[in-house]
Structure formats: structure tokens, C-alpha cells
Length: 627
Ligand SMILES: *Cc1c(COP(=O)(O)O)cnc(C)c1O
Image 1 (spheres, rainbow, N blue to C red):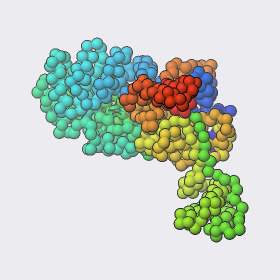
Image 2: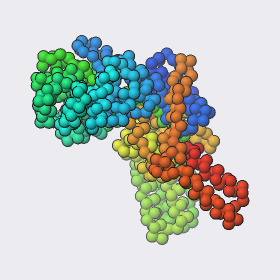
Image 3: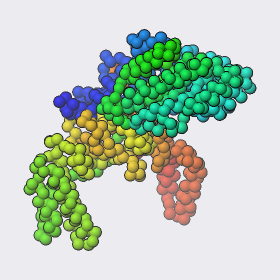
Image 4: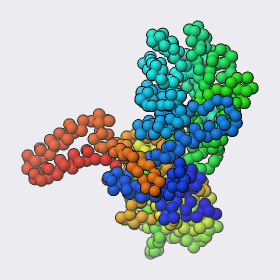
């Protein structure tokens, strides 16, 4: 099978979206999705080029055409479906800023999205401040969600005076009072939306953000009270948008249809209450197929963007036709699906801990019988008896450990026992690799997977891997034309035992270890984590005070080269210390005091003194990662 060739054991074809592939020389290559005729670029070569310019790994690579492709896909898919189905209105998507607020990212989205009248969604005051600094198309929308104080509302209402289509989505009955007060104070009418709490509950990691117990949106009772209050204030004509959001990464497209149907029911009820709704906002939730499995599971989805769009448009058209209403403008707030593919985290392997031993130690006079029995396993190790051999090897080793703890077996004999165990497991792994593994055996063999120590912080750069067992495709960036002879889990450089990646997507499904190559001592071996452009950057934290990584934004040039558009240095130690309220200047002063005291006691030469101070200040000004 093609998938089993050394080229695609990582399932790249399933999740790479045509942008990631393996080049003939075994490097990971990047293609330009906006111009597939362009030559592919070697990712490790890009990284080496950046290193030559002083941009070290770990590094977050943002690929501009990947981001633009995300914006293009959602807008063009909706436009195509609208045309194909004869829907009688437009799509006006907005990008939810919280999904990736980085200045470069938002600027690229706004620039590229202008021709689609693509807008922005702000869930907080700072995000609205970002949105209002951008030059959007005159027809684009700004949708304000989240809890709003009077200042937020004032800014939203006033922004209409300078041409922004800013809609205040009411999250609660109480918020309406704030809005009415501010509107009266300013003598200006707001554009209003109302956030509905749909009762339909979705599957996946975000099930709790949908349904009755969702903390957002209003139920029927609260909506009725908002309508009555608006009527009473004579402002029902301001209510032009209905909003609902089910949560992120909806795994099953049927949930989309059911939710949209329910949203449309509210829409027609609100219309018959006299609200002049023209815009139906269906929130985010369009998922990404991180594993490429095309199933309705937490890290996958059972649909394409195109299917999502046609389900939405078809359902809205059908419901509106049935209710005898005009087709509304359709808005979605898809974030993940737009930006996830745009960034790749690249890190280097610092060190490896190998868990295999080719040979069991020779028998010795007086060996404990458990050790001899364990060695005896080698005599009946055949593919049909793999499971039995694993069971026996684990049993004998554990018995020996028990005797060691009680003092019946000494250190050297125990060491020989551990080594014999490892040798047997390595032999089993060799045999197992050639035959079909059951998942159970795969898991057990994982006990002897190597540990590859990598230069990154999971908590800073892949927080969802830690928090919600998110799976990102992780792949070595070079030598993919060679059979990877080893299996490893990846550990990061924090001192936290959770700082590891031990679930990987391969072409055959999930695996607890990653196929990797043996690495020579002086070899640079890069690993990439893909599809990390959504949520990861801002959710990352300063565990062990590892800060932001270096970031490079690149464009792929038509001649196959790359153009470095922007590079942002990662945090220095100085910066992360300031975040946790140290004053680095004082710290240098107090370190100098230690040095001067030691110098005045005659313990230091002037050269020592100078070197100590230089090392300390260099560290404070340097990168937080391994250099
Ligand atoms: C987070 C959020 C989104 C984005 O959701 P995705 O699943 O990333 O598309 C959209 N709308 C609201 C209200 C949100 O809170």
C-alpha cells in the first residue's frame, strides 16, 4: 500500500491539506496552496536559513500563503455554495480575534480578507480596540460578543460614526440596560444582536459550551424579556442580528444541521415578534481534521469545509423558505478552521535516551532462577507467542524487583536482570515491527520507546496537548526517505513530567510513540508540530519561565525560495522575569554585590569577577530556551 511506504507512515496526505508533503530527498516540503504550480520548498532548509540569520529553534513558522488560503477557503466555499444553491443573500464572515490575536496574523487576515468583505469578531474590549484599528471593507462586519461594560458599548456605538458596522450582541438581559443607558447618553442608536442559547448539544471536547448548561446566551424566557424591553424603549428596530455559538471543533456535521435548524426557528419567531432581523450569525465550530481520520471524534471531523458550508446554506434556505422569510445574510465566526494550518512549531532534538540493548548479559554461576527463566524466553520467542513473551518478561523482571527491594538480590544482579529484560523487549520489538501489531502489544512495547529530549516547552507552545489531549501531527522534518528505525516519545525541556508528547497520528491511526531515526552526535534533527495556528500562542504559559519562542513569518516565492517577511525574537530571560514581577536591574545589582563581597574577601581574581558578571548579564539578556 502506498501509505505504508516510508514516505507516508505519518499520514501526511490525510492531514497535510496538500500543503505539506515529502520531497524526493526526504525533507518535508511546503507547497503554496494559492499557486500549486510553484515548486515545493524544503522546510528544514527554511529553518537552516533562518538559523543562519540568527533565528534559533524552537521557532514558530508562520506561512503567509497558508493563512491566506484559510481566509480564501471559507469565503470562497460559502460564495460557491451560495451560487450553486441559488441562495438569495450573501456570506459575511468574521474572524474571531481570540483564536490568534498576534498583530501580524490579524493584519494578514484583514488585508487578504478585504476583497471578501471579511470582518472581525471581538469578544472583549482589547479585541474591539484591535478591530477598530484595522481598515476593513465598508461592507465588513464587526461583531461584539462577550461581557460588555459601558465603555465597551460606548466605543462600539461611536465606531459607527466612522463607518464601522459594529454590532453589539446582547449576552444577557442586564447588558441591554447598559446598552439602553449608553445609547440614550450618546443620542445614537446601536446595531443590536441577540445571543441565543440553543438547546442542541454537540459532541467533542466542547460539548459543554452547547445546550442548556452553556454559560453563554439567553434562553427563551430571557429573550422574550429582551424583546419586551426593546419594544418598550422603542428600539426593537435596532435588532438586526441573531447569534448562536455551539463551541469549537464540532466533530459531526449532523450537529451543524440540527443546530442551524434550531437557530432558524428562533430567527423566524423573532421576526414574527417584529424584530427586523437581517443577519444570521452561526458562530464558530467549523473543525479541523488534525488526525486526518475523517471521523466524528474529538481530534477529527467527518466533513469538509465545503460540506459545512453547503449544510449551513441549504438548511438556512430551506427553513427560511418554509417560514416564508427572505434569506438573511449568513455570518460565521470560524476561527480554528481559518488559522490552524498557518503555523508550524519547529524544534530540535537535544539528546536521546535509548531504551534498547542488543544483547542480554551472559549467564553467570549462581544467577537467580528468575534471571535464568527470563533469559529462557529467548528460546520460545516467535511471532505467534509475542504476547506471552512480553507477559513473561514483565513478570520475571517485576519479581526480581520485588526481591531486590527486600534485599534478596544485589545491585549488580538486578542490573543484569534489567538489561536482560530490555534485550528481550528489543528483540520482541524487532519481530513485532515485521508483523501486524495489536494496539495492546503496541502499547506494551511503548514501555521501551526511546525518549527524545526536545528543545521546546509543551506548556508554552502546545498547551492544548497538555490541557485537553489535543493531537497535532508531529513529524521529523528530514530523512523521510529512510525507514525510521526507532520509536520515541518526545519530552520537552520543562521539569514537569507532563511535558511530553506521547500520542501521535500515523497513517494507521493513533500511536503512543513516534517513528524516528537514530541521530548522530553532531546531527541537527528537527521535528515539526503542525496545525498549531489556532489558540496555542495565547493560551501558552510560562511554566518554568520558558517564554515565547522566536517567530518567523515567511512567504513562499514563485521561484521556490522563501521571503522572510518578519521575525520576532522570542522572550528574553529579562522579559519573562519582568512578567513575574522581578526587576532584572535590581537582580544584576544584587548579583554584583555577591561578587564584590567575594572579591573583597580575596576569593576572586579581577578576571573571575568580570567573567561572573558577564555570564550573569548575558544570561539575563538571552533566549529562555536551550541555545
Ligand atoms: C471562540 C469563539 C469562536 C471561534 O470558534 P472556532 O471554533 O475557533 O471557529 C467564535 N465565536 C465565539 C463567540 C467564540 O467564543
